[in-house]
Length: 259
View (cartoon, rainbow, N blue to C red):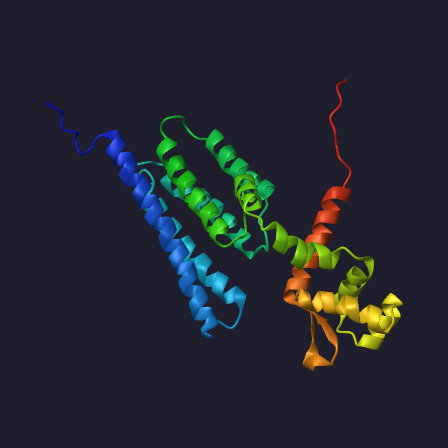
């Protein structure tokens, strides 16, 4: 005969808790999708309003879970709740960033670790586990918003990188000094064909060839077919990427030396 598994065994409880966490994560992601749809329909006038709503929603859910998960009979409950709420609120400020780095999240983890060092072992573990779980949900939200990518996420995205498209649409258009000069000049203001000719020292067909490569890759657009050339949103992101890459690889490498 096989023994019946009691419904309250640790493994079952862990499975249930895991499912609850997944449901909460999906709820936040669904809320984000809804706010995006509302934004596209004109419900929000700016991107900031969208993120403010999402941040408020996330904060409310975090505090609700914190109140439910913290120890009820503890003399330090009020003080600890204030510190935990402050920690979680500071994490949500990262949603205003265009990108959240690994270092920033590591710094936030260190803040939580420093709080834990002042706690009573055994007595405070439950509360810190709850805060840690909420923190993981916040990081998952940042992943969903494409604000943060772990090294594992980055490696996974590199694995599926479409080589042909990347070379054709990005690397080839950028791998020319004159085209880079054009993009940099359009970052400051729209330019006419004659202005770009003066800036690049290219004439007629030579300049037109480079502009056609940039417009075909959608890095540059032209107003009205014969008007001024402007930098597209894709072109802006490409320039920012090149600048970030250059700053990273040109920065001095610090190596440790044995005494």
